[in-house]
Length: 88
Image (tube, rainbow, N blue to C red; front, top):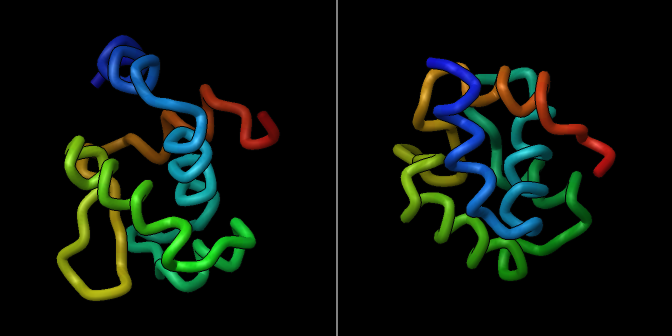
């Protein structure tokens, strides 16, 4: 997968969804615990639920276990870490 594959998907996302993905990528794990993600974002599950749902519906992330999230596309985490600043 190349940079264009990811940049086309990310340029359409609102900042709130990009930030959610950035925080998700900051975990060094294939699956991210949603409780830990919410805590790192200083948000409740209720606050993050709409973002999570939109990202699942857009097929950027998925959840096959309750309370766990993963990136749908291989190398998505690497792209985020290498091309999107986590401080933005």
